Every structure is written in C-alpha cells, then in structure tokens.
Length: 273
Image (cartoon, rainbow, N blue to C red; front, side, top):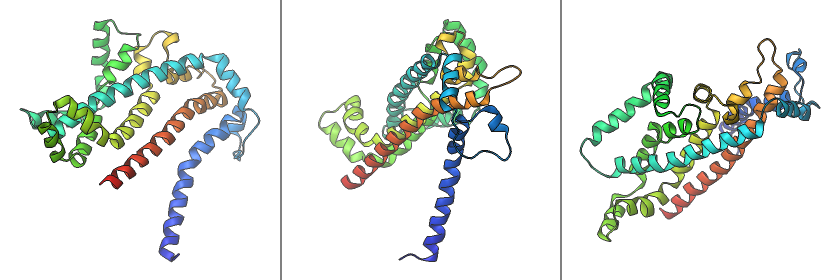
C-alpha cells in the first residue's frame, strides 16, 4: 500500500538520484557546446551540435588512443596484481594465526592514515635508484598492493568464510594455496568485484604520480595527456570537457558490469546460504 511514509522515501530517493546524475549530464551537455557557451548566462542546459568537432580537436591535440592504451594497461596490471596479493594477504590475516599477526595488522591500518602525498618524494627517490623513472614499472609495482584492499578482504573473509570449511579442507589434505584458490576465492568473489572496480577506477583517475614519474609523451596516461590540453594563457574548455567525457565512458561501462556481477554474486551467496 502506498503510504505517506513511502511517498516521502521515494521522493527523497528520486531527488538524490537526480542530484547524482546531474554532474554527468552537465558534462555531456558542455562537451557538445563551445567554450563561449560554457560561460554564457543563463547557462545552456540542452545539448549542442559541437560534440564531434570538440572530439576531433582532442584527437588532433594529443595522442588520445595511445594514452588510452597506456592507461588501460597500467590500470589492468595494477588491478590484477592487487586482487591477487590483497586477497592472499587478507585471507591470511582473517583465517590463520601466526606470530605478530595483531601488530602487523595495526601497522597496516596505520599506513592507511598517512596522506599519500607524504610518500611521493621517497617513492620517486626509490624509483630513480632502480632506474625506473619514465617507465610503466614505476606506475605498476608500487601500486600492486594496497592497505585498503587487504583490510577489505580481511573483513569480508572473516565473516564469510566458515572456519569449519577450512578445517574440512585441511582434513582432505589441502595445503594453504589450495585452500586459498579452491575454497576462499569462490566465496570472496563479491568482495573481489568491488575491489577490482575500486582499484581500476583509482588507477585510471590517478594524475599526480604519473605526472611526476613519466617524462616521455608516448607513455603518458590519459589524465596527464588531458592535462596538457590546458593552455598557459587560455584554455578551450569545451575541448577539455570532451576529452574528459571520452575518458569517463570506460569507467561507466566498467561500473555497470562490475555492479551487475557484484549483485549477482551476493544473490548467489544468499541462495547457497
């Protein structure tokens, strides 16, 4: 039955949805306009005819597809490595007892509290010592493990993986890695789906570290390449926004795919339980 309480609830959800969608709608509208339209008042709230013209100028100004492939490679490599190492460490922290486990986990949590900017200079010095400045290794290797991912998997595994199931596996002769691969990973799929999306989006949108470490235009990531569209004295914001729109589209596709997978995994787990 439709009550006043449900009406208020749906009204609030609708308003929240519209507020969430509006920035993306505004991004699309501005990508179809000229820079003078962006500054016009009252603002133009409907689509214009200049989308393909703006996109063509983006393609002429930067190597968009090269930067796209660079970003896709770095983001995919970091995501795969994070999923493996973080799930392995999180599973170990959650279900196995070993000397120093408590203190190691406290140190892990402490690293999450330090601002990432504090590590930029030490990280650059280390990359320079290894001779990795200007290479993809400097983007991938430091990002192949993160504290949040270990914490997230540890919390999920602690609640979702029954200790009795692991004990049964040990009785059947399963070693640690087989328990991880055949028992833990299937149960951790919803958590891994979220971590994959979180990591991929974070690496895809990263600007500061690639800006510092890369010195070859052929290896620029999308964010660094798009930043080069900003002029010293003037900036064609319509062109910049069109490039930003092209960079956002893959993330939307990824989010739709991963969210669907996440929900289906949660539903499957609920049915099995």
